Image (cartoon, rainbow, N blue to C red):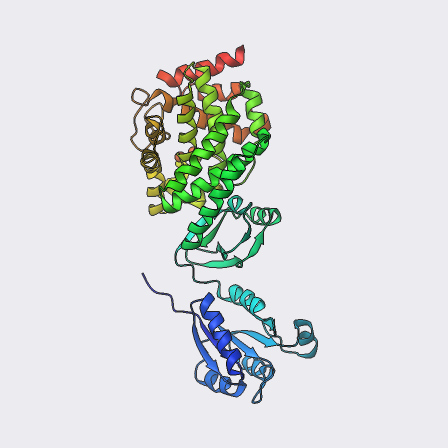
Length: 447
Ligand SMILES: [Fe+2]
Ligand SMILES: [Fe+2]
């Protein structure tokens, strides 16, 4: 892969300690090539030979050629570098006094944060070599985050959006969601530490007594988000297993009531956000409703459905999925929209997720089959194996229809009618268990 040249920064400061501090500070946050100058005049001499600096950071008061004079020189000579003025004078005063404006002002003595902000904006390429995606909901309960958090601008470019020890509150969640940002990024090691801390938090939250059904559903969404983040970034771990099991227990506790489908769907209150995680956390409710309808329900079946739901899409790391309201549509459009690597990842996800479930200890058998078959179709048009109703396992059929029903409900919202779903799917679900399940759903509607 072609290496991008490092950004170049010229640091102009007459006090050696401060110059050293600024250089050190930049290097600890960014990968950059840094050139130092002792004053404006020396900087000017450097610029006469070489103007290829992305950023010039300059002190204001210097004995030989001030920061202001240097800026004047830069503007007159149409040097394209961004200019950050470090000054004891605040930004407004600079604006009042001078005609030539710097691109940013970092006021002394507390210049580090404003300098960092300006650099983040100008460089947009901090050291995020090994970044890990985190759903924004997942950060919601974190409070103070001891790590820097990044947003992705493009495949290779990241910008720091939260600094170490910034507080992440619900208003931040809304802010990112409004911008359509579903995932932020942490450095890999930071993410590991973060997941550990979150796990403890969810363990204690799941034990909280007297939570309402809504609270449990909300917590279930967050835990599922965390499970997806962990699975897609790190694969199987004991922490992932523990968190998944907490999520399953929580859902199973909540599912026990025997509500009619219409009520059940209403209670699920689908909201926008991390689509994959939300549908994964709501699926057990519908899947278990259908198994009951078929007379196939048992503790073991309920557990299978809950684990299959949480894990079935967990290895998908693509944020592109957040754009789709319906996985079926994604499957149909994937070939045109996704790059070949992403497409491959998408077609592989049922088997990858199935492999993940096999690593879980002490769980009922055959969950991997449900997960592996969740994109197969009655007529054999699905993937990855393209098997038809004669070879798709009965519980997989339940799962596929529950998934389909949930997607349909997500699309229809308030206009949802089960009879419309049945009418629409009659031709598709025309054989074997698919037909039986659809028939039971129709009977339910008539009764
Ligand atoms: Fe799914
Ligand atoms: Fe899927």
